[in-house]
Image (cartoon, rainbow, N blue to C red; front, side, top):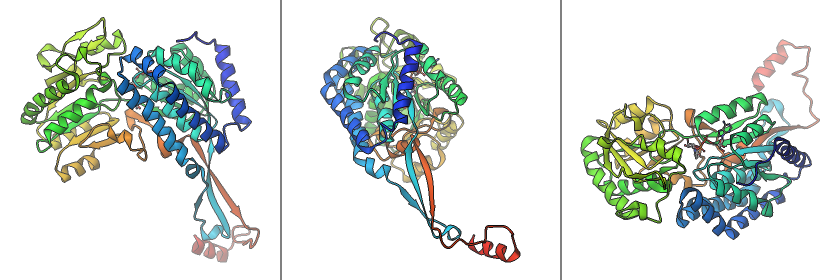
Length: 462
Ligand code: NAD
């Protein structure tokens, strides 16, 4: 991380961005598409630097860094760029008879200056994906990357000004102090990605200025496996979802719900997939990441009870390594079932069947994602009908993120709002309502004095 900015410096940046917005710098479509283009160039031309930073922060392999951070952001940006004209267009809405002749439409207009506060697990993606939407909607933006991914934070702070318009887009590094200082200021929207505890601080601070917030949080995302599922494929997809980025993914399947017999069949298949992906000793695999720091390492190793370990369980504090670990059987009181795991630990809890699994999920906080593996269409439908979650994945995990037209965001304790794609564009815009009346005729119906005749007509025209 570069040297921290002082509070007056932070306030000056905030003021500068607000002035640029007031001058309309970020509003034209050419500015928006130009910035998105520049952002794509920034990633393409600095791929190696960003990959090195991500390896330093999280032991990410080049492939993981490229697929889930760099390429993901480039695709999101080019999708936004290509759809910009369409998203920005005025939208006609029908005008009722009472207000005719006249035309009504909605004009999406930028909100102003957006503060983006990001976590460390996908430290590049989670700074730049909200930025793409902020830019698309014509806003200025200040990004506060996570101090727990210092190499990526420093790379962003150094490289961004070379490509993006520094009058409108800034990166401010730092930890709690910088965030606290930023949250004192008056923003037009705050996009926060992180944990529930800090989300409450952010929302409280935002309330002081009546600033709207988008909160992208986490939670325990359940994964139900029914006995009729293709267990080979289910095991492969679940192992991929759980152990990518060393399990530090907000939408990773957090725990499995399945019956006793299926659990017995699934565990060896999970073991086979783990070995196929990361070899006999995942510690040696170039494709297996590390826990971000020793604080999280200690938190995670506490969840691993020896008598629950079915697969893995090995760890090394010095290198923040925790092997891909499966715990079975766990119960609802096990430590691993108390909160979001956010690491390479996958508990399996036995349930009698789908009903019990859904009851269990619905009795807790609404998750960011919920998954079901089954070939039974009625079961898949039941899942969609009965489980409230940010996103539902049927027969796969996490892949909904690759569908640009799908919104992404939590519900209840897993968050509110979205910043992805068109729905994100709408959220970081104000949908300004416009009505244009013709001068003639100017019916006297709505004007005093009232009369029963007028009322009769008003009833008809309603
Ligand atoms: P965190 O809440 O600890 O930190 C997030 C950001 O808030 C960081 O930039 C940090 O500097 C800042 N911050 C920390 N303490 C603060 C304070 N007291 N006041 C103001 N700002 C403060 O989260 P984290 O540990 O970085 O990330 C992990 C969490 O994020 C998990 O719960 C995970 O599920 C969630 N997450 C959600 C998504 C999503 O898209 N929904 C994506 C990634 C991570």
